Image 1: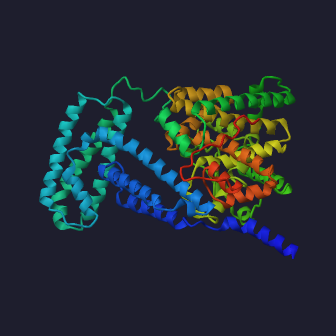
Image 2 (image 1 turned 180 degrees about the horizontal axis):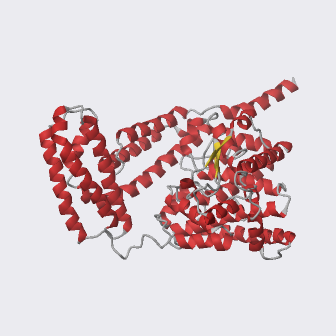
Image 3 (image 1 turned 90 degrees about the vertical axis):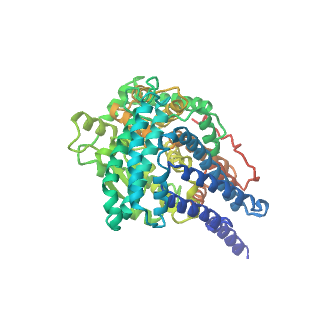
Length: 563
């Protein structure tokens, strides 16, 4: 009898996390509604788009308010808070963009008749082509007048100019789609519209190019690095941190990263001393860079590191690695174009290998090889594959997949970084070269917090960020440039680079809390992946069964001074 009860308790512990909550359909409906609207209102730089999505978020805020929060299960309460948070976050950033759009909207105030044509195309309404041709010709004349007028009234800064140019480009894209719907299918439309459309299309492209450069010369767009980003400012950083359930200010996170930075340097000096370089850790790092493998040998080097890390983890029974994950991961080679943004290999369903191609300059080839040496990669193969991103993707597609809209880099990148911390603490690196390789990435993640937050606070330029990575972390310059370009010019969220170390520290703190309550590491690791993606503080509520209210705000002061 006792054995049966124990078996039932274990069954509940293992199986309960697999169940979805009462709000599964609500979350799915929200995401499907949003996707339907995005597909229909495809011009995301139009008043129509901003007005409709403002209403969408208002409507969904009201829908959530009609749900009886107190009657929900713990899982559903967390889903409620996650959805409420997601709606608020998306609406906050939508309103920032809407405000910016309104400031430049007059650049397209001649498009009303053509916008109506674009809207009516969705239902296939046949246009009066003769009248539409005149509207196109009139729009071309208006563009000429607008251009001359705006030459004497440049935008206050390049941000406004860029927004205006994007609005013109988005309008032109919608116009092209509508035109091609009728062209050659409707003979009357084809006869009247071909030349007016071609003329207007050329004028719109020239207008877009003009708008993008028509700003006050006191507004600096490029600091000489060639990397163009958009600092969001302190207020937006504070809001972004709150939406990620991070109860720290950007200044506190920068200070914590600087403390971690100094710890890394001390550890690097220890490893440097083992190699015979004493306090000159930079010279020791140069020695490690020269351990790169020759051209053509990188795939095998990655496979060897994968086998080594998986054996280390399984020998210690730290997490369940399903056989299918070990069977189905594979490699791809990263294109030279992508390497300009991602100088190191990346991972997910497959691992994308970054290594020189024959058309690269000799100097860039060497920098790529040195930056991807096996000892640097020692810290990151498991980050990208198992138990990092590959396992995350595998589990997220199988357990509570409805939570994927709650995507956050603090969970995705934080989990992978957490494993670097765990493996370091368990003496995974044995040689001083391996230690320096892992520390190189650790100090880099500290630097990411410092330079990305300071950039968005307006305290560092892209070139200063590059110099920090070269002089204080030890990056090859081309790799540093690619890292900074990725941070600010690739579309990553403003807090993405901050999320690695910060999320890792959150997972580490949560691990310690649960181990103190009697959990094993394996129980913790397996449960995390069966709850799917969400801010780590919300995960903590589920795993520790903590009380939660409808107006819950972030309050978990996880440790940021971990060594």
